[in-house]
Amino acid sequence: MELSLFAPELIALLGGLVLFAAPILGAGSATTWRLAVLAGSATFAGAVWSLPLSGEAFSPGIYYVDAFSQGVKVVVSLGYLLVVLGAREPVTLKAHAWSELPLFVLLASVGMMMMVSATELLTLYIAMELAAYPVYIAIALHRNPAIGGESSTKYMVQGMMASAVSLYGMSFLYGLAGSTYFEAITGQMGALSSTPLFWFGIILLLAGFLFKLAALPFHFWAPDTYEVSPHEVITFVASVSKVAAIAVLCRIMSLVMPAGMDACSVQNVLMWFAVGAMTLGNLAALRQSDLKRLLGYSAVAHAGYALIGVQAMSANGLTSALFYAVGYAAMSLICFLVVATVGRDQDRVSVEAMSGLWQRSPSMALVFLVGLLGLIGLPPTVGFIGKWFLFSAAIEQGQFVLVLVAAINATIALYYYLLVLRQIYLVDAPTDAAPLRWTPALALSAGVGSIVVVAMGVVPSPIWDQAAAAVATLLH
Image (cartoon, rainbow, N blue to C red; front, side, top):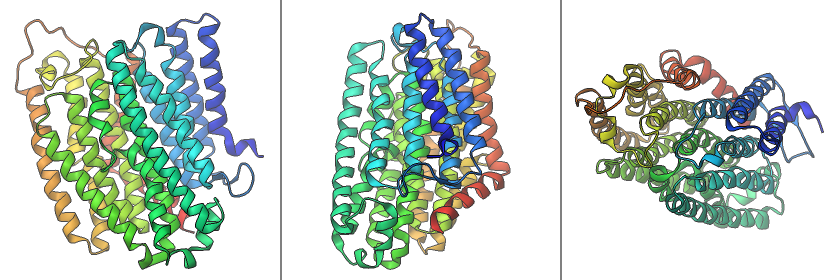
């Protein structure tokens, strides 16, 4: 075993041990938060350092380190760091849980980093569960037991069902291929591709990751969980987990792409999932008065956009999906950082709570504007160029109708996003509303996220080139 290949995960695990021991040894929440920031910084540094590495960290065929996996780990570790910077005193969590939140989020990040390196079915399943259970627990730490218990239970039950479906799909693949190793399954693609049961198993396998992405038909948890989860927890779920889910979808689709036309059944299923997610998410968001619930349905719609790239089953398609995942994570992050600050003392945050935000904090209004412009898909943000890449990948496959449906949905989304912006800039703040101020750490997190959203829109080539190189390692 080469420990250097396991550097980001190992650093994060050591950081988790420190965060676990700190409260036991009497450290307060402020000290634990500083340790969490240090652990996040060290994990990010380790992920950046490991970018050029490649090889197998454990037994052959189980866990592979390459440009794809390490690039995603850089994004996951940075996302964790930015989320923790904004979670100094998460008021919607129980006070005694302030020291516990960074630990659970870090463990979930470790699971996500392991997911993108897993090249064996059981390893992938264990990593998927490691990424899920800490989040279930973190949601249950809501200061209101009734709200926390309900939202955590809904999320957990539906997540366990999706995991069970994925495990069932894995059993089909093992039964047909006689192996749980991705390389062995790909090596038998010529024989397996003519078996309908194989494609049924692949679709079932995708279920667990479509759930994390909040893509139809595994989207039911998103609006309810977004609405009533602790603000800082849902910030993590809405941003970092999407990158990991899309990355694993790309890896799985790279396995079946050699089958060519035989894979059209999976492509058709994902195409209809994309159409359904975009349409349902945008139409349902039109009727929402709760801001977090609105963003939950928006997440369903954006899952549909990402699936456009995944279902294209081409190098450009997977690259555009990976690029969009990074951009969406940044857009969602800065929106939820502002929502968490505005609704700091509120279990639920209504659209009306954003009234006159430009008067209470011009900088927060600007950050939220950048995030929403990205979600709408307007230049100069990554939302515009990201959708351009996705639509281009679909057009290359002759899917003009799919692109037309996506464009219509983007127009529908413009309406409800503009309603939120109207509340921020055209409605006066309540007379008793106090001014809002950033903490230095929160300002840093929001600033970095905003820079990423704009920089990827103005100069997309660095991230695009990295995403293209990562996808090339999958398809070699």
